[in-house]
Length: 117
Image 1 (cartoon, helix red, strand yellow):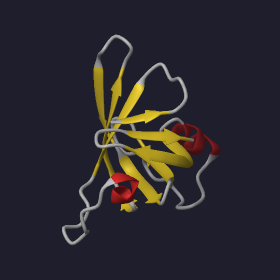
Image 2: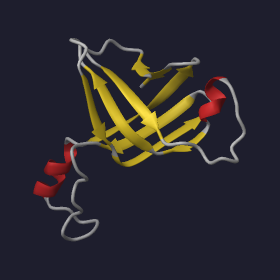
Image 3: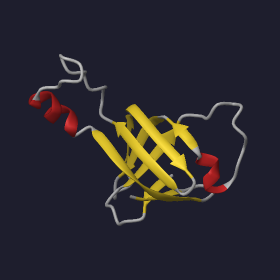
C-alpha cells in the first residue's frame, strides 16, 4: 500500500511490476532501489469503494530514501500527437489531466510505502 505523508481524502495504492528474477532480496527501503513500471492504480475512496485503473507510460525510480514517480493513468493510453514531439495546445490540454509526476522522500515498512512529495 502506498500512502502520502500529507492528509489526502483518498488513499492511492500502487501495484508495481515485478523486479527481474536476478535481483537480490533485500529488506526495508533498499528493497525498492531501482527502476519500476506501474501496472495498476487503485483508489480507495473515503466510503471504502475501490476504483482500479490500468497505468500507462510509467517510470518510477527509487534510490536510497528518495523517489521519482511519473505515470499516465486513465481508461486507455493517451494518443500520441499528430506530429511527434510537437503537440498542439489542444493535445497538451487533453493529456494534462492524465499525467502524474512527483518526487521526494519515502519510507518503507513490511506492508506500506509512505511517500513525502
